[in-house]
Length: 221
Image (tube, rainbow, N blue to C red; front, side, top):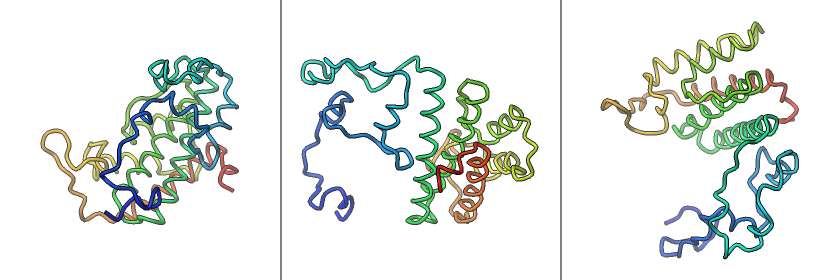
């Protein structure tokens, strides 16, 4: 199969799965880290005030303690939570920008753009309320954003209206519309005639507005 060749020219379905890669603690030995808008995860980690949660013994003795660290942490300080949400948002924006160039008409591209908007709104709400909103309805989230911040800026106009209309008249109330082909109550994806580029264009404008509202323009210069 001629896919995933950028990973390895010889990659094949006959290759053996590297099971240790499924354990979070095994990754500690390699010094790797994800990227967040071209920023190393290690650099972000240095900015966190909650450090040292993973003991040196766990990291150094992977074989003996491979089940010790399950890849998550709890009780992060509020400032650290905000920082993590910000960097997650920046990376989704970066991914959306890149995938637009490769797949400008893909439902996957729309989904990533939608998720970037959702994370951006939740990040802004977290900064304001210090609480995480767990819903996924863009209309509800955007209306809450405008209420919490009492937004009157002219350039922010129509964001909440667009998100609400999209949710009702394209997604039909199905928040996973671009993620799965079927939904509850035997509903299924009926967007085979959608102008994906048009949706992506509007998503891009919304994201640009949210970036500016969050005062993060410099992150993309």
